[in-house]
Every structure is written in structure tokens, then in C-alpha cells.
Amino acid sequence: MRWITDIEAGRQLCLHCRKLHPLTVRTCDRCGSTLHQRIPHSLAITWSLAIAATIFLIPANLLPMMVVRSIAGEDAGTIMDGVIYFLEHGEAGIGIVIFTASVFVPFFKLTVLFYLLLNIHLKRAHRALFGLKLFRIIHFIGKWSMLDIFVVALMVGLVQFKNLATIVTGPAAAAFMLAVVATMFATEHFDPRLLFDTELEQRKRKSIPKGEAHV
Image (cartoon, rainbow, N blue to C red):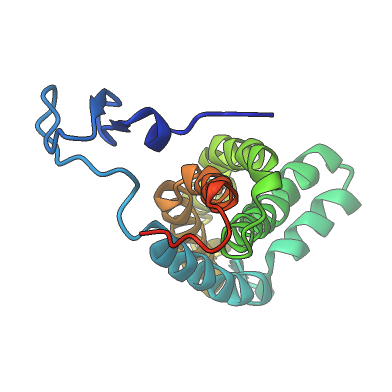
């Protein structure tokens, strides 16, 4: 499939109001923002945030997400403990939703981000269109990534029986929140147009005759 990038068309998109401008324009005439051909430092920021999110996900899945304190003692559970609890008590729907939003989605988003970053660095231009489809998927599902935190916060607010039982958030909640936020920012800073720039670079190299210098 043959496509034309904005670079080939001599256009640049305002990253704020999405208006197209010629390459000679430096400031958007609609919103006044400084124009950039690509998101500045997109790869460096995305790599940093994706790695940070991966690190935060380790304690988020190993440490307790929720702690129940009652007269019988203290009981702490991880994300997977909560999923298993709902599955064992006949609430498979809730368990699947929590597993999907709190385990599958974060790891899936990070896997896709690393896949896209590696495709750019390894110059895999033939996978640009497939990479764009994956990026649109993780960008769409990103707003559901905090579901587990919302469930814990709701239970903390509702289940407070004075001295009989209380529910508090565990240390995994903060780590999970940081992982989700880092992943969301990584997705926002990734510029999918870089996937197609790789294909454009390869076409330019092929068009240069052998022995001719490219300046």
C-alpha cells in the first residue's frame, strides 16, 4: 500500500488544534501554538515512560492492593487475589472485568508500545500500517486502565463498619496508579507518524543512484 506523508506533501499539523499548515509557517494561525513536524523528543520520552511503567507494574502486582482490617485480624490481597476471590464466589463477570482492566490491559499497552518503538528503531517500515492500528487500540482503551483503583476507592468509601471492619488501600494502589499514568503519558507522547517516516527514509535511499552522495 502506497501512502503520502505530511513531509512529502509539504504540510505540518498543529498538535493542539489539528490545523494543517505549510512547512514555512512556524506558528499556528488558529491557536497560536508553535508548530512542530513531529512531537518533540517523542521516542526518548516514550521509552522513558514505558520503562518506568514496567517498573511500577512489578510492585503493583506483587504488593497488596487492598487491606481489610477487622476484629478477626488483617487480611491483605493482591490484584490477582481479588480476581480469584470473585471467580471462586460465582462472580466471574466482575473477576474478568478486573483482570482485563488491571492485568491484561496494562501489560498489553506496554507490549504494544515496546513493539512500536522497536519497529521504529529497527526500521521495520512494512509494519507501519499494522502498528498504527495497534496504537489506535491502546489509545482507545487507555481510559479504562484505572478501573481497579476506582473499585478499591469505592469499597474503601462504602465498607467502613467502625471498629468491626475497615478497608484501606494497599501499597500496590500507588504503584498501579503511577504505572497507569506513566503508560497514558507514554501513549500520548508517542508519535505514530514516525512509523511511516521510516518507510519514507527507505524510499529516499532507494531513489539515490549508487555512487551519488545524498546531502
